[in-house]
Image (tube, rainbow, N blue to C red; front, side, top):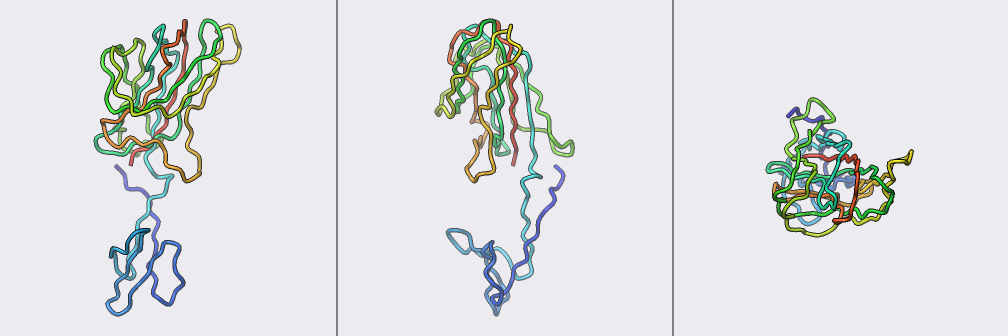
Length: 220
C-alpha cells in the first residue's frame, strides 16, 4: 500500500507552553514523553517527529448492488464481513428501492459474530476511492435467497420502519441506515473476519422487490 502523507509534530522543551498534544520534555538527558490520557510512557526524544495519519488519507472503499430482487419473505439481504488483517470501519449505508405495492417495511442493521449459511448470495466488487490504495480486505455480499441459517446476532444497531414505494410511483424510497458524522462518537467497527454487519428485512413480505444498496467503509 502506498505511504500516506503525514503530519509532523515537533517536541518542545519545558520553557514552551504545554502543547495541545500534551508533549512535555525532561531536561538533562534530552528525552521527552508524549503523555496519553493514562500514562507517560517514553516514546521519543527532543526533536523527534511524530507521524499522524490524516483522516482523508485512510483507504476508503464502497460496494453497491442495483436492482436487487430478494426472497419473498426476506431476512438478511446484504452482508459485510470484516477483515483478518484490517479494522473495517463503516462510514455510510444507503438503501433505496421499489416493490409491487407500496407498504411499510422493517429495515434492521444487525451485527453478527458468525457467518450465515446456505441461501444464495453473490460477492460484490469493493471499489477503492483512490486507485493507489490496496485492494479491500473486507468482503460484501447480497442475497437473492434467504440464508438457511443466520449467523449469531450480537445485537440490532438500527431498526427503522420505512415506506417502500410501489413500482407505479415516480419516486423511490430512500433510507440512510447509517452515516458517520464529524462528531466524536465511535463508528461501527468490524475488528476481525469473525465480525459481520447485515441488513435484514425481518421476514416481512416484499413482492416484486427492486432494491439498491450502497455501503462505504475504511480499512486501517
